[in-house]
Length: 469
Image (tube, rainbow, N blue to C red; front, side):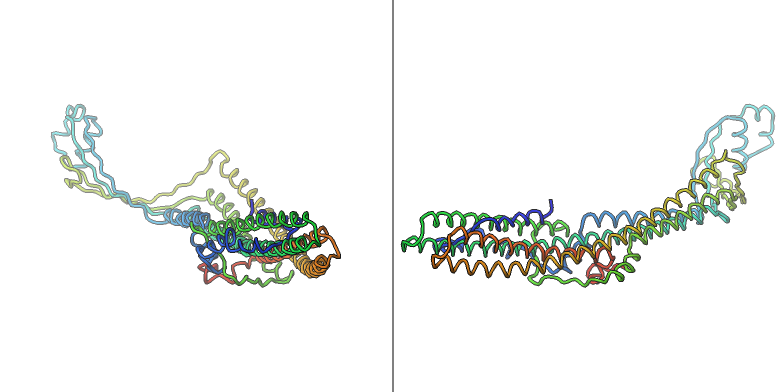
């Protein structure tokens, strides 16, 4: 469940009538307020740029993707190895009385004598030992499949790098939301504290009127209950502050609590046209474009299997009767080879047709992704416009509710209205305060979401996040 869900629960302040009394004011320095201040003091205060930089370094999901990218980059080396010389050193030991192997071993050891050419010896040789040391080198000269495979490995590594960059932007968006949630939680706590102060003031007025014989005892009871409810609301708001700090810490890959600087971050948003142009350069689109290109390479790879492979190689060999790596004799072999599969049962044809279908699939996905990105940008702009209008209306309602509460409070003090009307006015004021906090958070989140959909959310933090280009 998102922290915002917990924070929105604080809007119940709006439907609870609040009042106050000096006796409750005496307790103001104890309990939740002091605990919240202690938490803020203990938590590490960071700027948004620092939070993003730490998340780029220590976020567990990003660390995992960075390791996956390293693995992809190592695959490039694996693909390149098919184009480089392959050197193999081998040591063999054989003991045999097989006529052909025994004669061949003696011949390799350069120990053949006239006696070995006797028919009886050739047909029934004694057991013989043979230590064979060989160094073999093989080098591909013309290997079209290997060249295409190397290009594909490089392009896939590039696509994975773009995937990582897009994930970094996603983590940055989540960090910004969590950062804003801390600020919003503190604002909700401020709303709760103001509500508690109002509740105590209302209790004070009701008690003073009752003692003067101008009010009812039920008014003091009702405002007393409102004070206790306001204290509960403050506890809930304090919990929201703590949870918001822990959520940001989790995204940053830290263990201890954190809090934000007092200054709320601002966001520079683009126009709809600028956002659409910028969004087409997003890293997820780049990754998909790279994979479409690689799908074309896959067709070439399937076609390369119709071509021959040409290579050269050689072997240097030592043979010994008594010791490993001995050199009773030595020899060499140099060769050139051509490998060409003329018929494979239609395998290459099927693979090429499959590769063509896969490229068509990738092209369709790319087209769909571009359209989806354009829609998301448009949707984010509408969300931002709605959030901006909602914030303006909420601020206007807050101004009216504050003035209404002030007037009704004055009328209640002069016995011109009832406590019920005062409670209703206070409820409206509390609701307006909470609404302004919510709408302000909605606006900031909508601005960050638009930057994310436009692909520019990290532009202002590249130097702190280690760079994105």
